Length: 406
Image (cartoon, rainbow, N blue to C red; front, side, top):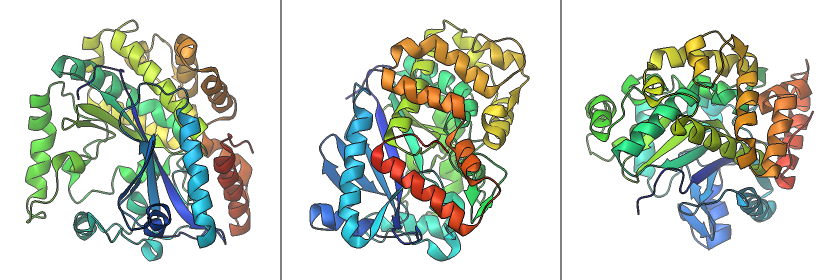
């Protein structure tokens, strides 16, 4: 089934399983699946939401079970599944932990690959890239899938997504701590994402996709170099180029969708879906060309967008944008910090966003990204005891579907 622009949406949320004691990583997604289904499976159909395994044995993904035309009640549906999973994990003395990075995990000693279906793919990934790093085993995200019908719609959507990607982490960063230390980046997940496939740089590129606006150009510029680069490693031909493409937004021509991947998971589904709804409305505005022409959107090279992106993953909403040509995309003219760009966009699209999501977004504007709020709560005390206290509070926010305020 092919859909037109913004007709339907697909949302995916990744969560880490941790033990109740000391929030130790719990590689027991297979046991969770057994508790739910009665047997080990990679996917559990739970009505509106589906549960899936991931590369590592301690991460579960919750996703819309097929495309959905409406986001209005989606945060409630995700939250209902969070509650159910936490109830199933109770006898295993475990629970879900939100945010994009576990603040104390040591991936070198704690990472375990999923050992069941598709395990040969994960094993090959591990052999090529060594997945015992934060970039592989300590990076939980939200993905937004948006459909396009044909090349003409792909051109518009890809142009809009590319120019918006660099500033998204200012809204969504939730990964400021690795191994008990502040990393210096508000979005550490995206910082390690840039280099976790350095062995085959064609897979991630510059994170921001290249200036390609047709299926043919996408294959020539992105897929074909990926396939050529992986060939010496993938001697059994088990890897698919849709699966290998690791840019911050990837074209899925197998299902005619673009998947946005630069968004850190938040503290609760209410925050996640609010951010998703906001991003979607801004993309609609860009696609409409009310702010700026399609040709102008297409004219930005990935290198100039990557520079802005780098500043944003480090400084979040406080990153300064001096590039007036970029600011004109959003109807702005003078040098400005990124949080102000988002506030001005919110004023333009808020009437199309359900009120509960508007309220959540206002909390983010007033108090900063989740990373900013986490660091405020930590203060100068990076002791294990204090970090655990803050992240216990975050796990309570997930259970209660409420935003975190330090």
